[in-house]
Picture 1 (cartoon, one colour):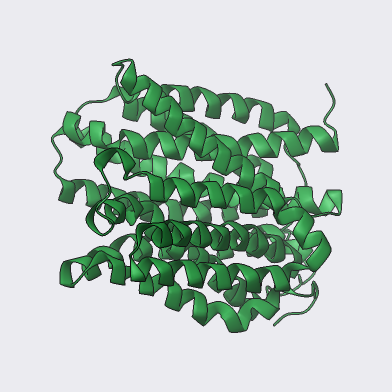
Picture 2: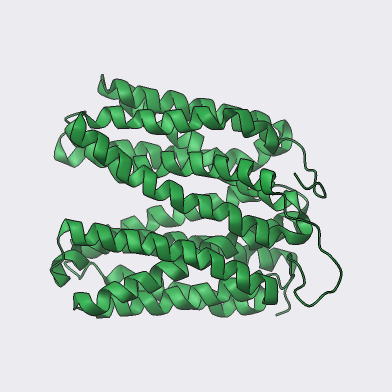
Length: 386
């Protein structure tokens, strides 16, 4: 079957879905992996930090491969690494072997994160219409499905790592299909050309990166601490503690499903302002903490904010310099991992000092700080180095 634009878009969407499915499978398996290897919570935190560093390194590797061989090669390589790592993580029992495999998983994670967005930018450009919203919606839906699969696995008294075997098979399948159907185009400087390339827009990368940073600080804070917040601050019954995060995920999915038509109608900048305002209002509602219904509304508003800002930012990143969009997106993607560390760690520190509800001032302030740069999402100026 010959590659067509529709098949390429479907393959890219499958890559987004496999990435989210695998990440959710890994995070929901962490308690079982901790128990199996004898790691304590501190050791597990160090492993997660190493995975984050590995993911940042993976983004740099994706940039290196994309410059030389295109983002298709980077994405296939990352999917293959993740499939291998997940198989080994699910199979190995000793901490001495598990930790390096989790770090390898982080490397693949960063490769796929960056290369997926590179391919998404190429698909959006080829279609001449917004696509990032539905691509990220596919990822969100796959993450929810992965969580449900893990729930079914645990209910059936199967090992929690069973979902990792499923995720590894999905990654391997998408890698094989992607080698044929991903876009082979290169959107990077030619390392062998004597002609000077268009400079990378450093200021533009910084501004769009700040939007990504703000979105992921909010997302990581809620995803890491949302259930703990529901238990410690809202005092919900144990069976209801996932409700807050469930409201957040539902809002993220809804926001991403409607993002593309809203971008086409309103443009990126007005929707970005709406998203930031929603995120700020949601985080402030979480700071108030009571009554419980207000906090649940806050979770949903925060979900709309993060759900919109991520596809908006990566869509704009791909427009800054279309001929070097792979390199631009790799650099913008690095802001994701800095945000992940801050959004996961700082709220815990604040909770130790005072109350967890005050920790949500952090994402609110970061979203306020990014408001002045949202105008950067308005008009493409592809050839301008700023």
